Length: 324
Ligand code: SF4
Image (cartoon, rainbow, N blue to C red; front, side, top):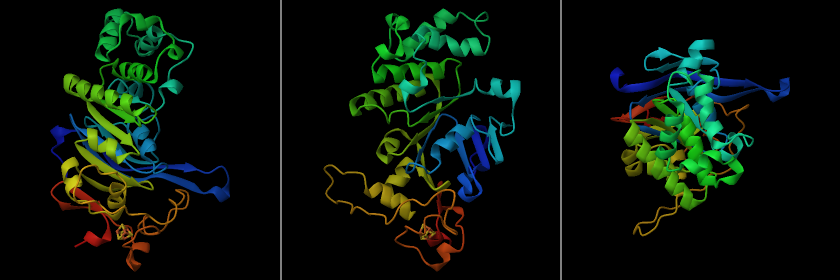
């Protein structure tokens, strides 16, 4: 893989695998993340797109060590966090936070907004070190809410307001990296746009780096500087947003893009309908995991795993069609 200069990289994942043992012998091992290497550059939004169950949320949670990788290394600002535990892991969490998909499920219904925003400072025993009340007001202002929201409980807030609280909580400890795990998927379309705009404003104002996960390529396109496409535990294509919009190499990316409705374009893309279902990650096909659905598969595809290679500067693809 073409490596960015070390000083520009915030996070580097190196051959990470996340495997889960099945409940019994017959259910096998689920290979949720299967040998992924990638870099997240400082200040960028790295979008990850793929169908439900492809492993993108597991990848995001592993990158900030909510899950432990089965194998591989994860470097955050040059420090390997893959095997970190205890106090070191707790300290690391100040640098990397997550915004979850469903704001209703991740806010404690019995706590007020003020109590929810106080939690990160309590967990890190910072309540005596800093002016927490002032910091909480600052967080509310950053996400466009007011002081009167502090006494509200989650059920008294709209979906968009709840997600703003989720964002404020993620920002509390001034992280460098935020994993946005389907952060707008549960919201109405009009609210989605507001929250995406807010995330963009915060990124510019606070110099944040995002790892933005979504099943919706359209949403990923709106926010990302670079995009990684995931299929069945593997990254199959990585490119800058505009490179990918201009040219997709991987047949799966082509199929994903063809499903986005086009408005006002003279040349209409033909919708590529993939055959069959996504195979189970506990029993992925040999060779290229996509070969059972790929319209361009050949004999080699079922035998050999394609490597992620650079086909143009900064544009990486895992497909035998581009091996030469
Ligand atoms: Fe399709 Fe083969 Fe390329 Fe996989 S390696 S995407 S099966 S052409």
